[in-house]
Length: 632
Image (cartoon, rainbow, N blue to C red; front, side):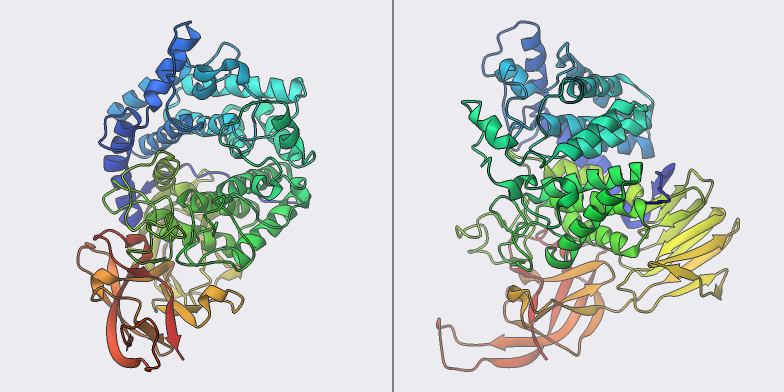
């Protein structure tokens, strides 16, 4: 496999909508989550700081009793916070934030065992149980998130303390599973993608070798977890060691073709596989990634870029099973889908990957965080009815409002780090080309010498202007949803070469490139194989999926019916600041109140307000629906 491997950009200073989201995370989310980790916020207890303190005390011989609180993977919340802080510091230096990060890093370092092992759950509870429950223990998962944080913090500040902690921990894991040849692979993939980041930050070849080993051995012995479980007399929460779909270990990874099981675990694994394929020119591994990508995006993904349709195992189910009202669609899963898409883009610049990456970000990922940055969704349904959602046993996971925090708090810091690092997804490069994967306002400096300034109100306005501060070959993604795209260079319309959805243009210094994308809201129809969506349609404008909320529509969205002759107008919705909404001409159905009746409902002309999906549940409890019945 011959690839033009892309490398990370040098710097992105955000403006516009992305800049606003980053300022929200920088000024509100990061400080709030810092207080949560220290148990200083009025919300669900975290105990993360105290877990590290107690682990350090335990290593010193103190009796800390039952000094651990939280999930087995509680350490990872600290790592994701540090990574978000690192990305924030990289784009806007902040000595106070850096001081807080350094304090946490010192605390983490104090909890590291002499042999490099680092995990507060096992250090506090029982050091003899280390590495005996890879199925449930999340040891390598926590290490992976720490490695991501260590690489990001080193690149942002040049400080090595956390990087050295990570390398010592990676050496410990390498010695166990490579040097000593111990069997096993992580129950929750994550370390694979993280080791590649640590490898690039440090240059330590063992990180690359360990990542390759963990990818290669997965599923070779499909009964490893079963034998591991038989060898111990304890469990964390009773995972089924025989559920190969859930654990993505029914086959070696190069033979896999269907996205199965726990959705977050799956896309974290696929991200590591794609990154390794690109790093080592492994064509067989890349072809497996292509099959898995096709499985997700062609048969198992929501229109919002959400994945994982069932609450049972937070998992993929089967092809075309995409219910709206019981959707699981975990925020972390869409973050992971962005990771997977970005690694596939690095190998093969194709709009199909960038389109999905953008779809996930502007819909499910952003929906995972309230507009004020102080509450978060773990689950992202496409339909919500108060009195059923969050109440019925079948819908209890689909909440009508975002909680302030969770006992299992993987999603809030995941959103924070993704927003703060968006430049890494929006822009990429190889030796001779600067790639614009997502239209994100701000200034971008590429390592290959190109410098661009992007002015746009995207995703609300479809006009984008790039000025070449320093010119060079540039590739602009033309989204598949834009059926009418106009490109002008210095005011003159051009027809550039287009390959796999990217327009390739040579820019000189001070050139101005204008792109006008399709403005028109469009009706979207689902495959007839999706039983839930038969006879329904939804509205998209650009990358945004729109939904209807009761708060804008007399409390009732269930009676709304679309027509094929869609007429819309951009308006403002109450309580959503400057977010454009749509006024949609449609029909409203009126029937009887009895449970069943022979009386035919009446249809009357009406107007209804639709808002971007990521804005839902910010104005109190109310009905919400994306897909409406359509009268053709």
